[in-house]
Length: 76
Image (cartoon, rainbow, N blue to C red; front, side, top):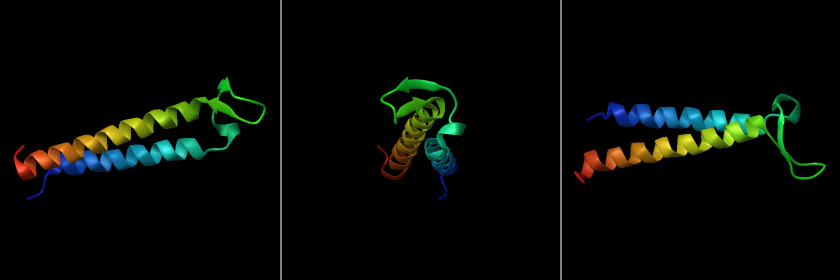
């Protein structure tokens, strides 16, 4: 039996996590304005923060998909 809700949530979670990882690996010149400077070599830029946010959202969606799947399979 296919659980379309779980499949859609899991696929969305994977896409959001990939988007967050792509945002984190971009070079500095593409990352936007500087939000916080740690030292001369390290800064936190806008897309770093956006990438972190996307990773958290994707992880939560993945967790929700797992919880829904467990409820459907084991009736809890």
